[in-house]
Image (cartoon, rainbow, N blue to C red; front, side, top):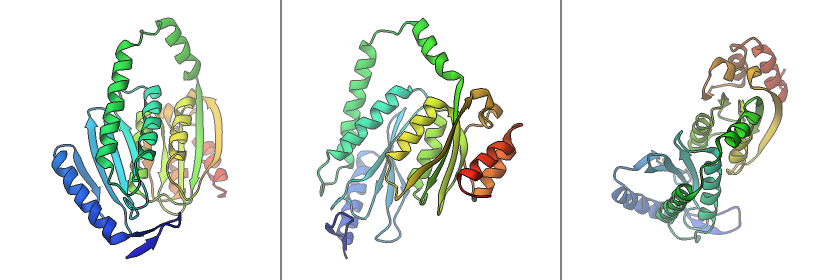
Length: 271
């Protein structure tokens, strides 16, 4: 079955799917302990999602669209353990984007991406070993200057369906010590709060993913102590079924929950 991509290039879905199956079989044999099939395709035009555990602190998630490998790259997300610093996460995710973009179209590249990322991880480890320890006073001062600054953000997406993106939202929010609610579907919606720098890192990373449309509907700075969910020790982004459930969830936390719920609803243009 021939299909035309958004760039105008034609590709054969059946041929791509066969090549994807062969690549997956090879990956399963190469990474018997590390490979997980997250989502198989029930139709030719559906995505396949797989996951490869690179090491104890790094996991790669791949989305193989119907146009891969013929005319597009896979979508790739890098997940981290809690022991990885934010600066290192930013660096490695930027490195991963460069690795994916340099892959030659028309060529199966999942194992090439894994290999290149492993080399990048070795470079990071070597740099970490050779770097001087930061002065404790400077480190504390830099950290304290951000701890008191909180941020809450509301995001709108044309749709939020891909399980890879939904898992990335939950995973990244836990990595960064954030809390919130997300609503998959048409449209997708997300409320998230936490330390300002971490929220910005979270939002910036989401915006690098492929979306039909994504908008930051509202953002509000406030002291960390005023954050509704964080102050109640909530952790991570929780998925709910409807926009109203996000508002209800916010109302159920803290003394200013109703105010934050209204902030969310007004941002989403819901009364």
